[in-house]
Length: 134
Image (cartoon, rainbow, N blue to C red):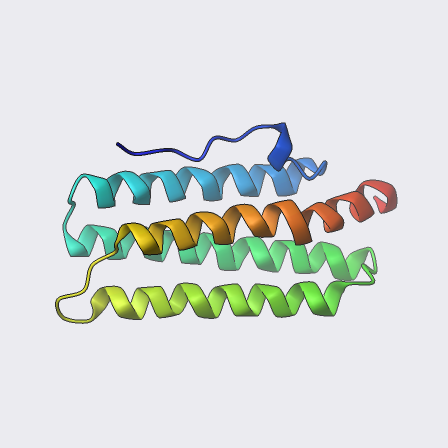
């Protein structure tokens, strides 16, 4: 049984434009999760993971622009976390295209933790700061 990530107020960082990005990322994650559970083709999984990575890269650029504009004091640490997360996602992509590899529950759980923990911790702090600064 597939367990979707569900958007709720716990995941809100209090900044509408960031929350909207996060909703989109959660939606794409759920598509990927269903695709894995439904046994979709490797090509479809790769395309869906590519979409998730591309949207994540765009979202991180969006956050980084806001951090620069509003002089977020934790900008460099937050940006470094973004870079680590992107590297992890790109490693998953490489693993997926390797022969005899497929996305497993363990990797889906990693992506789920990666998404929710970043929103709940680093993005929560950013949202609190931006709510005051904007």
